Image 1 (cartoon, rainbow, N blue to C red):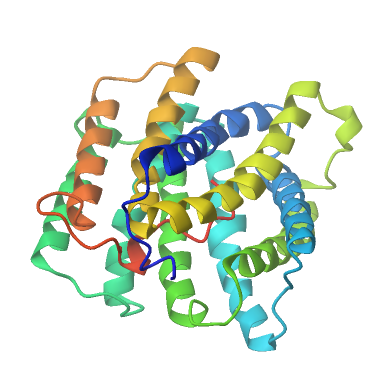
Image 2 (image 1 turned 180 degrees about the vertical axis):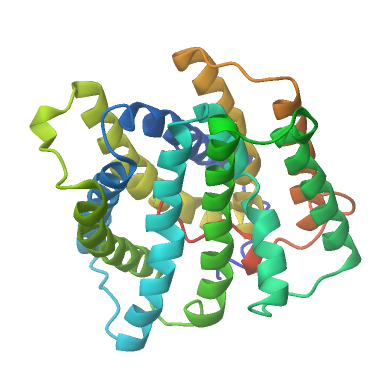
Length: 322
């Protein structure tokens, strides 16, 4: 039985705690990014969190006696996936959260499935564009315009920050269908591929970060809350969360597990409001609801009950984290 054929009939209590925990971990990641960029350059924050996540998954890999990929072809494709699925989006979210609220970054993350679909259809040709999906894309695009508040005019640091967060989601839109087309058919486990992806991303960031942002600061020179945020982002959001997500797929099925997309912005908004005291304009949560409605329509979550599978290109990425 595979992740794509596992039925969504598991007892609620067997998968709901892990499902909620994953939404909390990934939703809280935007809070930790906000705390981290207060003292760290976004590239340094991404480097530290990815390296921590890589170490975490390598430990899990050793415990489970799994192994890294051996084929050079797979590693070559992982260079692209690591760049667009880890290094670039994590860094863009960091830059974005220097300018916008963490809760707003969480909302922009929810647009990922809407960006994945047109790229999967037009560029990678791994999906077909149906009437239902076109309607979902239209709704999602309208929601994006509402979140941006385009009637108020464009420009300024806040608007730039939102575009950076949207750019981060767009990077996932490249990584997911690319992974579907060139890597998904390999014989290696999701854990193996994700561990390798984080190792490659760590190497990429270790090369780029010093050139752009200078040498990374010594961790002992950082405040305790920033160090804790980096550890939470790496060990929890990029390590443990992956293991939880795999279990959710096995127990609840890919279709149900993928709906964590709807839970992440909810927790991002709650945590940002309660912990950081952030506030949003009225149109941002309204736009978020329209975006999520568009995602639901595009993924076939509304209407009659469908078999427990979801098009691979519209699922969340093999998670290296959020």
